[in-house]
Structures are given as C-alpha cells and as structure tokens.
Amino acid sequence: MITPEIVNDQYIIQVANEDHLRLAETICREMEESAKARGTGIAKRSPIYVMEKMLEGKAIIAMTLTGEWVGFCYIETWEHGKFVANSGLIVHPSYRKSGIATHIKAKAFELSRTMFPTAKIIGITTSLAVMKINSDLGYQPVTLSELPGDESFWKGCQTCANFDILTRTNRKHCLCTGMLYDPEEHKKEEKDEKWNFLKESKLYERWMRIKKRILLRIQPSDRSRSRKGDRELEIA
Image (cartoon, rainbow, N blue to C red; front, side, top):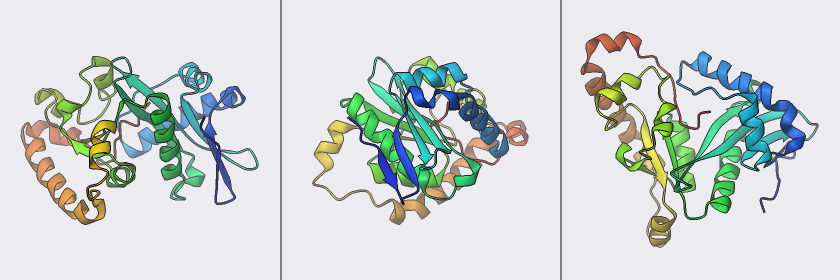
C-alpha cells in the first residue's frame, strides 16, 4: 500500500482515485499546453484515458492541503509488464520550480516498484534536471536498444521535432538519453559506489553538444525543424 505523503506542510501526494476524476480534463489540457510552450514531443491522452489510470490505481496526484490541483503522473507498461515508465509528469504552472516534481516522481517510482516489483523502469529524456531526479532514484543511462521494442512505446516519439533522427538511425541514436532502473542489477550494485550524477553532469553536457553536432549534421535540412526544449518519455 502506498501511503499518502505530506510535503512541506503544503501538499499531499497520493495514489489518485475516483475523487480526482473531475480533474482529468484539466490535467490533459495542461499537458498539451505545456508541451506546446516548451516545443517538446508528447503523445496526447484523452481525459477518459487519464480517468482509467486513476481508477486502476496507476496514477499519482499532488494537491494542496486546501484541495487545489498541483501535479500528476501515471505509470504505463509494455511487453506484459516487463517494462514500466512513469509517464505524463505535469506540474501546474503556479507550482513549478517548487521541487514538487521530484516528490511526484519519487512517489510514482514507489508505486511502480510496488505494482511491478520485477519490472525494469525506464525513461527517455533530454532534460538534465530529469536525469538528475532519475539518477537519484537509481536509474542508469542505457542505449536505446535496451528500451522496449514494442511499437506502441516508440509511437510516443512521433510528435517530437527530432523523430526523424530516431527513424534515420533505426532507433539507435537520438538527442534523448535512455535511462533504466533494473531491480536485479540494483541488487548487485547496492554494495558498490552509487553513480555520482553531479560529478558526471559536465561530461554529459559535453557529450550532448557533440551528439547534437553529429546527429543534426546527418541531414542538414532537418536542422530548421529542430527546436530547443526538454523532452521526456514521462509523456502522456
């Protein structure tokens, strides 16, 4: 059972339920508006889909103690539960940069581990901030070939400005970085030194600059279509 968490005496983060169904349309609208504002790729989800996640107990919602909506995230599965992703992460504009996203992701991670204890938890992102959150949870960077081969998984990338890079390289390369939490590997590594993300973040930034130069140069005409922004498969 996932226990509700009170954060900073202001917010409550819990598994969403039927009491939150009324917020589904607002959440979907904010997901879409946020994606447009940041120029990121996102697969649209309907309010009905979000409602289903709430009723299945596969969503996390953050509210103020006075009942105002703050943030949301749900979990999605592929290959019969072999892979799990914390998707659709969204925070209301009024509460961004408050650190609440970190707490929502941590609770979604806890829910994923509880419901699918043997599943590999995955993410795909260009955001250094998201990589930091994932790293703190135990994710490690992986090649794209280690992510699900399921077509429905990659369908979420189709609206991204850099989708052509992914297709031209046969899903071997993209500007996004794949990350994965493997519960079995994590058991083996518990005694080893944890990956120091802050120590390696400058190296990652350098690698991203090199990767952009290489991948965007493959087909110069694509450069005009690329847009700056952070994309994550914590997408709807």
